[in-house]
Length: 155
Image 1 (tube, one colour):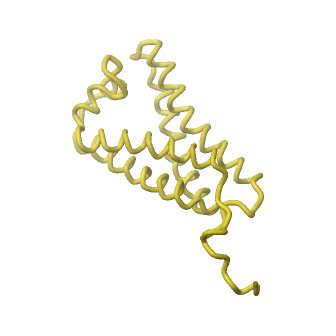
Image 2 (image 1 turned 60 degrees about the horizontal axis):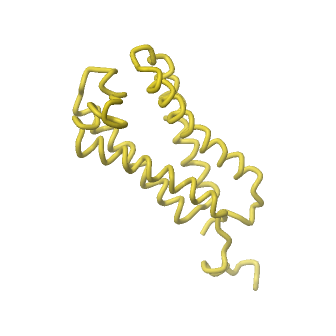
């Protein structure tokens, strides 16, 4: 094959399966959060993440517009995570993961500074949940740094 010829799509390497599983997890969590907030904003406000644990409602006031915006934002990221799960090109993966961290790190910092009105189980739950969606992308970014360049090539 000449250097200028393109490799057929079917023979191009893709990201390892575990990277795709992690991306699919991020896609699923943002899809659920986004759809709930966009299509049932009051329910999201009063019961997220689960009945009896109103994480959002303890940080009032309710603002339908803002909750729907959060839903739209999460659905946008769900699309990006789905896209990168299907077509895991290295630079796209890096851009999506860094963009997510631009959101997720300040989000965690805010919640760390507003835990006092939550029950201990909810404080721990928030730290774990919000910390995990930071640690997972960081793990993926480190893996992409060390992953041989033959993986996650542009299509």
